[in-house]
Structure formats: C-alpha cells, structure tokens
Image (tube, rainbow, N blue to C red; front, side):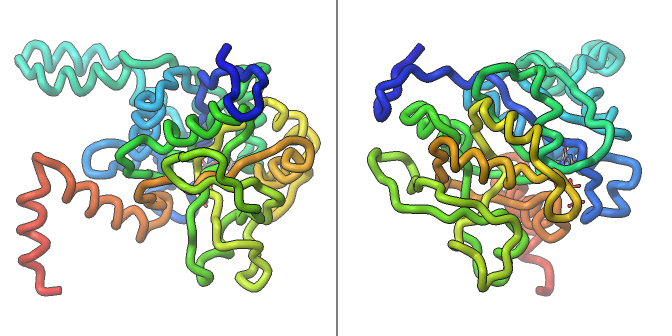
Length: 303
Ligand code: UTP
C-alpha cells in the first residue's frame, strides 16, 4: 500500500469507478423517451463510452454502471455481440471488428439497478455492495471532458497525495451558477498538481448567484472515500425531492478533509441540448478522419 506523501498515512488504491446512469434524462426529451441519454451518439460513440474510456485510460478497469428501467441498450453496448462480430469477420472488416471488440474486451463491468430514480446520491448508494470498504471514483457520463491527461487521472494524483476525497470543479459564470453544486473553499497549494486544488469547507446545491460561496461549480467526477456511504444512508431528500450527493458530501466534509480540484480540460454538458451540439461539433473537428471535411462544410454555411 503506498504511503501518502502529505499525510504519511497508508492510503488504499482506487480500483473501481461507478457510473450512475439511471436518471430520466428529461432535458433531452423526446430523444430520451425510449432510449437512455447515455447512449446518444457523440460523433460515432455513445456518450457513456467517452467516460468509460477515460476511466480505463486512468487505470480503473473495474466499472459499476447504475442503470434503471429502459437502460438495457447500455448493457448490450458493452457486451460481446457474436452475430455482429461473425458478420464483420466473414466480410473481412477487420478494422471494424477491432473497434467493436475493444469495447467489450478491456474491462470488468457489473450492473446494479436503481429501482426508482431517487437522485444521484441514492444511485451512488445503490453501488455500495460492489464497492465495499475502499475508495472509488464516480463519473457522470454526460459531463464529457476532453483533456490531454484524463481528468480522473489528474484527480487520482491529488488523491494519491492526500488519501482523501477529491471533487472536480470548474469556474462557472454567475448567470449559470444556480444550475450546479458549488463549493466554499480555502486556498490549499502544497503540491504542483496540474491544476489548482482547494480544501473544501462547505458545499451548496444550486444556490442563487447572490448566495453562491464561490464561482467553483462541482462537475461530474469524484473520488470518494467509503465513509460517504454512511452519510448517504441517512441523507434525506433535498433539492428537487432527490437524495443529493452534495448533501452527503457536506456532512463528510465536516468529518474528514475533502479537496476540490480544478481540472485541466474542456467540459461539455452532453446531457443538455446545446452542450450536446457543442460537443458534437468540437469533437468532430478534432477527428483525424472527419475534421478536415467537416471544417470545410461548416465554413460553407452562410452563418
Ligand atoms: P441529472 O441531474 O443529469 O439528471 O443526473 P437526469 O435525470 O439524468 O437528467 P435530466 O436532468 O432529467 O435531463 C446526473 C447523473 O446522475 C444520474 C444520471 O443518470 C446522471 O448520470 N442519476 C440521477 C441516477 O443515476 N439516478 C437518479 O435517480 C438521478
């Protein structure tokens, strides 16, 4: 077990990542009436695959996906598709065969069902028996983050230095701060991390701009110690009638240190229609096989 360079205490490695994907996706209706928003394609990959790849590139290959009713296509996507693979093999389409195989080959996935969409905090609690007494990551797949170093990897560097929970944050303009959980922080800079890190003093879910304790909004990446489960067990329904992860983190912050980490990367809220369009355009422009032709096309539009 590695030793924490800051605290000196032994720290447990993070091995598992939880993907809460049982939300109803109401912001994306009607597309999400009969298909999960996590399966909407960004260029040619479903949204959730970007998060899964980030997790694998960060060294976490033990994944737990929290699903709900109507989410079977997520399981099918990460499963082996014998018919498709046989057809591609017979037709000699080896490139496509590799693409399809890669998805199911690289990781161990467990699925757990959240019977009712009672909120993000409840979804994380649903994964408790798969996590046990060890630290774990949480990725909200609709926050797609394009980064040179995967954001989870960046956050693991902070965890590995402290042994405590780490929440990803991003500076957000005042007019949109009320859509986020917001952290109250104090400066904390003992190490040369890739981005600024802070000690969390408190968290507020969706504050009015005037009440926001900072301009640092919580986005969908967390590394959490298992102590959070005890707080989730007792968290009552909060904002929107849901069991909020933010409320449990608030309680956790009063028991043990939590750090906020301002990551390096470009985030898209792919669960929102405008954010989804921005992600589609920018990710397509970056693609070696599509970017050139797509750029030409965009330039030809009478904007
Ligand atoms: P969102 O706040 O984006 O909610 O959830 P949502 O239901 O998915 O989408 P909208 O707002 O209605 O359009 C944040 C994350 O938490 C998961 C979602 O799947 C998403 O990844 N979640 C939310 C659950 O797994 N269960 C819940 O009960 C609520």
